Structures are given as C-alpha cells and as structure tokens.
Length: 342
Image (cartoon, rainbow, N blue to C red; front, side):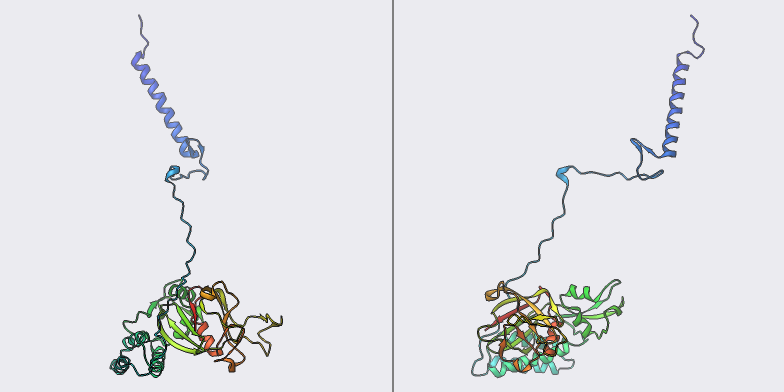
C-alpha cells in the first residue's frame, strides 16, 4: 500500500509545529495586551500585580484596640513625716551639715545634696528644721531645675538633641511636661524657632502638688522630689475644698476663661475690671477620697491677694497670679496629681 509522503512521523512533526506556533502567538498577545489568565489586568496595560497571599480565616489577626489610659488612684507623692517634733532631730542636723558641705564643694554636688535633703523630709524633725530643709530645697531648684544647666547624674533633667520634624509641644508630651516650661528654661521666645540638631534641656515629668488645708500651703513636686511651697487660699466654711485625690482635667488648663458665678448667675469676661479668676485656670477632676467624682473645682489666680492664706473661696484653690502662672506651666493634664490633705 502506498504511504503518505510525510508518513506517520511527518504528521507528528507537523502537529508539533502547529502547537508551537499557537503558543508563540498566545504569548505575544499576552505581552502586547496585558491579558492575565482571567482577562485584562485592572491596573492597565503592561502592569503586573504582585502575588497576594490571603491567609485562611483562622490565621487572620486583627489589630488589638488601644487600651484606655489608666488613671492611678494612689498619690505618687512621698509620705511626709507627721507634725514637727519639739526638739531638733540630731540626724537631720547632721544631714544639714553634710549637704551644706556638698553644696559648697568645688565642684558643687548639687544633685547629691538635693536627694539627701529630699529623703530627709520623710523623717521627723522640728518645725525650724523642716522650714530650713524646704527653703534649701527651693534654693537648689533654682539651680538644677529652673536654669539651663544640666548637672551630671541628675535623673530628673537631661539634654535632648532636636530631631528633624520635632515640635516643642511633642517633646513636652514625650517627657510629660508642658512645652511652656521648656520654653522658659531654654530661653526660647517662640516654639517655631526650634532647629534640628540643637540641644535643649528637658525635664522628666510629671509634676504634682500636695495641698495642706490646715496650713494653707501647697507643695510642688517633680515626680517625688520637693521643689517649693506656695501659699494658697481655700474654701470658706460650708464650702470647704474637698480632701482627696484630683488630677488636672483634660482640656482644663485655660488662660482667663469667661466664668459664670454659680450663686448670682453673672457672667464675667476677662476684660471686666472685677474679673475674679486672675491670670490662669487649672480645672480639676476628683478621682479619690471625698474628691471622687467632684467637678467644677480648680487652681486659679485671684483679684483679691488678701484671700491667700485664708478660707474665702467657693472651694477652689487660689494662688497669687505670678504663682499660678508658674504652676500652669508645670502641671500636665491627666498625669499631674493634686492631693488635698488636712
């Protein structure tokens, strides 16, 4: 029988050629028109989407919600020894002599002296000794805190190199202090002049205060280190300043806000000659003791400086206008505690 000129092998080769040609044509079409296995790519001609690995349902991890900030209901302040003793404490006398030598040393050992005197406040001592220790700590604060100097081994103050994009407000938030005090100690007139690469002094906050109702006194602390005392005016009989633990209210720091007298209903504006709130308002929120759940109270200035050291307010804590500006520049909403004790 006559065979086909190509024979069986020739037919197989022809089919191979045909299939190869078709594959070449298909590949060319894909390259030209960007067709994927299921049609044209949505990203446009010539684009190639990276492969996406889709995890199974039981492998998907959802981001955890950020927990709400926890407000501590215990004061962070050190426990001060109760009432003064009659006779001077010999240990305190020795500490006073030792710290005086540290301060007068060359070079002066300011931080060591500060820490020893601060620890001494928790020891019993005479009224005269307590007054001396507080005054000496206040004098030292002008050197280690309210100046541009950063002393070696000081855990409360340090140097910070400004990074590109830094703002003074965010630096303050990082170190738990208001940016206003950073402006003051670094002699910065305007926050926007902060330059990357510059070195500034920072304070490791937060600040707290303790108010003694019986003495009309407010003590200021940086963390648990005593800084200085202020005279205050408190609530009059029947409207006493509630004892307990407070925090600076979120959004509660205001400069001369309008105020409505709750007794008369009269609204006071900052420009009124008899505006009663002075230069600053620091709103408080009660979180412990008799203060828990109480609102409407504040630290603020006054137009009646004769009321400082007396019980004449509606429950708020009054300070001299210069003092309240300083305190305003130190206390941080939510983080700064205000403890009121007898």
